[in-house]
Image (tube, rainbow, N blue to C red; front, side, top):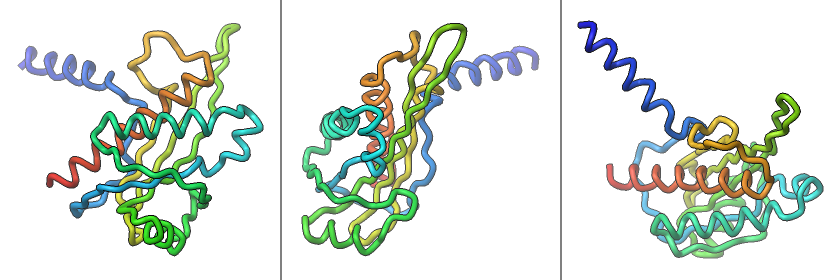
Amino acid sequence: MKITLISLFVLTGLTSCFTSGTKTIFKADNGFSVNYLGYMQLTNDSALSKVYPKTNDIYKNEVASTFKQNGLSNLQYTEAIIDYDNPDIETIKSICLKNNMDALLISQLVFIRHISVGRTIVGAEVDSKLFDRYGKLLVNAIHNTLNDNTYRMPITKIDDAVRVGTKKAITRVSQEMRMVAIN
């Protein structure tokens, strides 16, 4: 009994260390297939550009690279802007129809700064929502680089925070896409 209890605590402790900064907020129950995906600039890009002008360029490159690494190469970037918190379903449907997309990815990024004992750590929280061509939410995933236990050294550069946050959020979206499509 003692050994089983100790093993349970050790196993729980070890498994909780993996990518705790990444979470799936929502995943559709029904299966779906995405062959052609559209993505757009960060919804809060105008504010981010004032803080760090390269944010959207890093985000765009990382989204394309990560989806391609995860087996989805039919991607299209669109300049449209949709409110992240209250996305307009008709606009999503229109963009998907006009561009022959199966789904549209909408993301926002927030910079996080943590100051501790004379040191500033820069982080990013990337929140991504994937909508199908009918405007139905399929997946919502989020990654917070400051909560990610896979780092041995904290991120101190904004480029790295944007890159890592985007990569991990998009990787989670890709994983959830595969899991739902298989089930």
